[in-house]
Length: 280
Image (tube, rainbow, N blue to C red; front, side, top):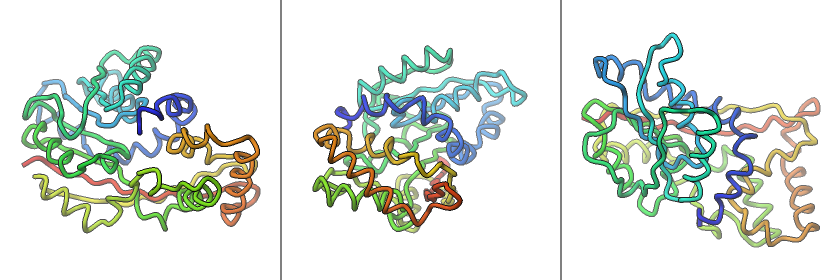
């Protein structure tokens, strides 16, 4: 499925990067890179980003580890994705942005091509829930971490707490006959905090924490702000739709999200968890 979506992700990569970097701060903070650097005692950190897509949060972490700011952190980042097209796109973007301490590896996160105890930290932004076997992915993340290493996963909270996705699911279900379930997209497999923390513990992580975040942007009401997420999840279906159907979809999305318009701006909240743990 994701092989057919890489072009949609690349189309929106640069436009979405600033917003992604803002919410990525929660994920990066959960890794506590300064503490890992102190434990490394001068050795550069090795950080693996899973399901990197077109580059975030791998780019942000690589910049932190470039040793160019007051933190003096240094190290290397491996950005990985199962889709070769994604890997090619993010490698090109990294080169264009001059990020020299980042390498790109095509990898299935359920069977990572890295040795045991080789990474200091692992990050994953909205990716693990899409694995065929998410628990296998958690287990392999634990395998490749060094003792004391940290992993952090950003995960969607329940659909009811994410009105953009609820509107998208309803509108596309009504108009194109396809919603998340029809497209094989399980965005909310880690939405329940109790279940999510238990799965992390079963994978071999200790000191498991889960924090929930509810940011809301402020977007002019004339902006069809749902298009990036919609195309990145349903690109093949939308490409088959007529211009009239796409126009009707935008109109229906506006109506569904109208309750979130205040003073001429959309203020639609999103809700996600950051699930983190330490390799024992």
